[in-house]
Amino acid sequence: MRMQNKSLDRSLQLLKWLIAALFIFAGISKILDPATFAKDIDNYRMLPYLLVTLMAIILPWLEVLCGIFLIIGNWKKGAAFLLLLLTFMFLIAISSAMARGLDITCGCFSRTLEGTRVGYSKLIEDIFLFFIIILINLREKK
Image (cartoon, one colour):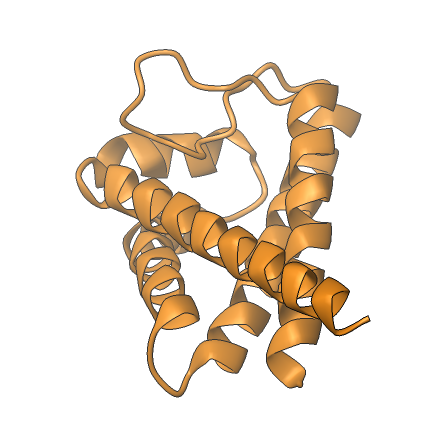
């Protein structure tokens, strides 16, 4: 039993590092090109332009900081919770775009030449990511 717990802890630790790296990488790609990221956000047609600009500036830094704090420091629980909220927000945005039939890229990694299109594969990917972050949150509460 103790061996299984150790194995589970190692697996969750590895997932935590992978999630942190994913958000750090995604955030940096957006920080390097905020104009493209602002266009990606605006394509969802969910926010007024002032909030689009504000989100394009704040969101990437939040992703990077949460990724860093998920690994180090006393703010692991807070970072894990914020990543859960962000992922939930991404799920809502993707679902909304799909429901309205928008043919857009997700904006996940703004600097990539060919962005990932919003669709079922992106939705499933984000649902999977959401559940992994739930597991990380449960582990951080212990």
